[in-house]
Length: 73
Image (cartoon, rainbow, N blue to C red):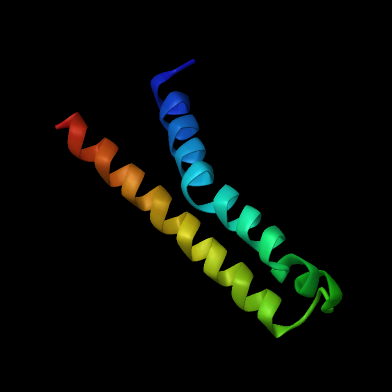
């Protein structure tokens, strides 16, 4: 495994372990997941969520790129 793929694996694992997995467990335990399953799937809120997700991914990629660029000097 190359250094970059190892870095990406660590970032994704850390993100999932810190934010996504506990949030999903909380939503399932508190009943929020049941309410979300009852709602319609497509709408304006979905578009906002998609844009927000893309912005977060872009910021993470930019930070990783800037860190890698600064280490090459």
